[in-house]
Image 1 (cartoon, rainbow, N blue to C red):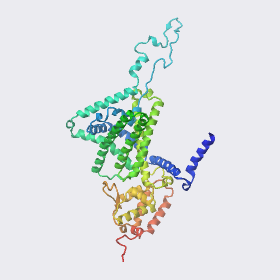
Image 2: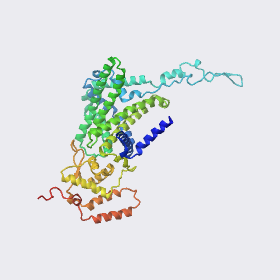
Image 3: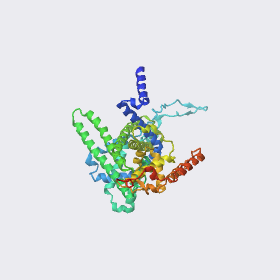
Image 4: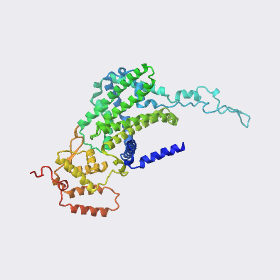
Length: 503
């Protein structure tokens, strides 16, 4: 057994230490997957995913009822709960992992406390005092009786309360007269529901380093599509799942098929929903392949998280000992936080798959704080040259394509593009379905001095307070600008197609 463990450890060590050229296809796949996961976790820290997940958890609580009301309106348009089977609520609880959020019942009886009647205590005067505690002499005030009124709710009681809440809310939504709410009330309802999607889009744009330039008419269309299509896709997947489960129950020996179908369709529903939001929400061109891979990773992690959360709730110290019946609140918040972390990690994976080619992510290790990235002079010239070549072809460039073209780290590219845009050297085109926030040169390359670009890089670099050699760096930058004072960006790009002489 010891030799087997040593061989296994040696194989794992060789898998991550051998040169890539010596690995077979299976080993390359494993090493690539582990490398992506490690780099994705690193990017989560760089993007402050914990803060984003906490903000999204708060927004979820704030928007929970409005989103649920709008979802019910869309859902009722397709027939409501009855149209997809009577056990749909149980399916929703299992899918969302809410069936695992329960408070264990605490028995505070004398038997559990191991308290037994003690002998009588005799005072010096000869008076006999009663025993410290005798359950047989207590009436309605015993801990056993008090437990019936103060005990934390069980899983069945909690689900019954949620069922009653959903039923009442559904009946109220069905009977409400929206004309009596008024335009202001309806606008507040819609705004509260959309605010969650707005926060989610901002977080997605931060992960993809996308600009905030998408017009509001396009944003509202996308937000409404996510809010309305999401419940429809989930309802459709639940309906198909329930029908297949019902069919499997009628088949002889279909128990194994039933165990396989339930998690598989839950995984498929999550995958489709994440593909939808990964493709629509970021203000960047998200490739379908990247969205598929990132959504699949997040869907698998979410299903595994539900298993881990179930184990945690069952094994961890009962929240009811600290919070009582309010223990459902921290458990629910914890589950929301874990859910958003998983969704953001899947988006990070899609971003890495789309922007980082090969195993280059293994060599990229950005600093811990890149809020003020130092832009090297030669790097900004590479970015400007890429824009000049695209300008000559009559094309625009987005951050993702620019990162791939230049081979520079995405954060540095994002910082340089922001500097060029703020200085007026780049124009941000109005975003639409074809151009989600792409840039173009503000004027031809022959009208942009190289020294001017180096000055922009210099201004960006001096924002960092980490330089220990500011005077030396300033002298080097002065020499660079002096050496290129007579050159323009056209000298670096070469003649355009219109200027190339033809025979």
